[in-house]
Amino acid sequence: MAAKPGVLVTRPEGQGGPLCERLRSDGWPVSQLPLLTLEPVEPLPASQRQLVLDLDLYQHVIFISANAVRFGMAVIDNYWPQLPLGLHWYAVGDSTARALRTHGVEAETPGRDMTSEGLLRLPGLADLREQRVLLVKGEGGRNTLAETLTHRGARVDALRCYRRCPPDWPASALQETLDAGGIEVLLISSGEGLANLLALPGVAESSKLESMTLVLPSERVAEAAAAAGLRHCVVADNASDGAMFAALSDWYARSGEKR
Image (cartoon, rainbow, N blue to C red; front, side):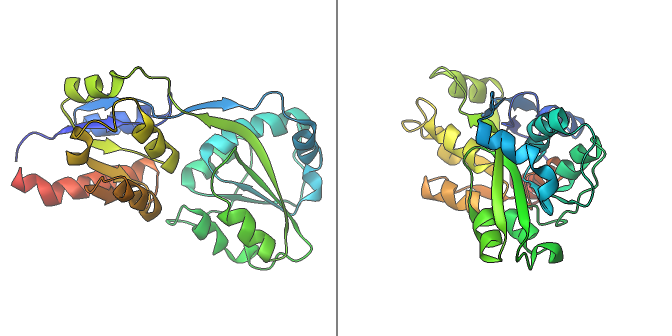
């Protein structure tokens, strides 16, 4: 079998290290070009601070990502050095749950289906009449979770504690990275990352991206890629390092013999 092709990891800056190490240990040439930057919402508007002050009035608290834990718990810890009792905590996936454990919080997860839809299948979120739910998340994003929980009877509030920003790369950054690393596979872990990739200067005029394989975290993101003319898509079970690595390995096992 030929040498493995170059892989570009696009996780936000400072968050791609473990995945890159795992790939390199398995023989993949790896480069990094973050497609998202994350920053806290500071200062929080008064209405958002009030949600934190009212934490003990909620029955359910849902963190939609490890980044939500990172930024959200920084805010919560400022107001609640001892967390209120009686809350039901939820995490969209295992990495989010692990991040919560560092704050002494045990959270329920949907298991392998690390999506809003997976969370919505949890029994504890089935009947929410006269209950309050706090979503800890970033600005923007999908509304599926909040809308469905509201339909189930909940009063839903969102603590928007961080924002996702596109990278400020020069027009040549992507092409130079692809060429220097011999990149043939891009690992993109979110819909926002894909959108930022497509918005980079020069991408619309380049045909190189169309020939590359993209490893994506969901069918929804793959549909967006296909709509943009990117046809070589591999869909991972979710956006975790393990799932992205497994999807890449499976793709190479199926296609590597032909290289």
